[in-house]
Length: 265
Image (cartoon, rainbow, N blue to C red; front, side, top):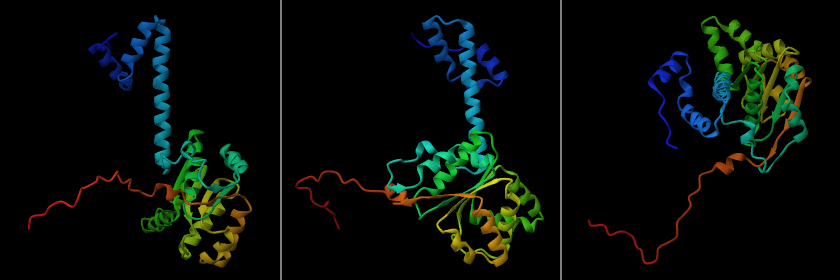
C-alpha cells in the first residue's frame, strides 16, 4: 500500500504543538495502523510513546555531552574478547552505582590503552541515565581551567561546581608532576568531596607513586590517604586496545604482467 502524505493542516498543527519530530515516523505508524485495523486510541498512545522515548534519549544525550562524556565510550561498545584482565565481579558491582550512593571513589589503574578511560566514561553514562550529575575532565585540562579561574576571580565558584556534582571523573591523572597550585586544588577537591561525593580517577600509576608527583608533602599524604582508603581499586592489565585500531593496508591480488607505467620525459 503506497504511503499517504500527511495533510498540511496536520503538519502545521504538530509543529505548533512542538511535535514536529514525529513527522518522519508518523506516516509509517499510520500505515501500520490502517493495515492492522488498530483502535485510534492505541495509535495515539504508540505514536506519543515514540516521542516520549525520543525526548528521553535526547535529554540523556544532552546531559552526557554537557558532562564531558564521549558518546561512543559506553558498555555496549566494550570488547569482551580483548586481551585484558580485570576483576569482573568488581566491575559488575561498580555498574550498580552503589559506590555513588555511598560516596565511595573508584581508582582505575593499568598501563596505557587497556580501556581505563572507556570504563570511566561508561560508568559516567550509567550515572547520567540515573539522572545523577556528572562532570568528566582530563586531569591536565581540569587543572588548567582551575588556574585560569584564578585570573577572573571565579576560582571559588569553579571549585564549588566541581564539588557539587554527584560523580566527578578525572582522567589520565598523574601523567606528570603537579605544581603547588595544582596540588592545592586537588587537595581541596578530595577533601571537600570526602564522604560527600564520588570521584573516578584513571591513572597509569599506583597511589604509592603519587606522593612523588605532588608538590606539597603534607597535602600529598593527606589527599592520598583520604582517597585511597575510600576507593575501590579496579586494575586493568593486558594488551592495548589501540593495537586493534591501527590502520592496515589490505593489498589486492597482484596482476600478472603489469609493469610500471610508461613515463614520457
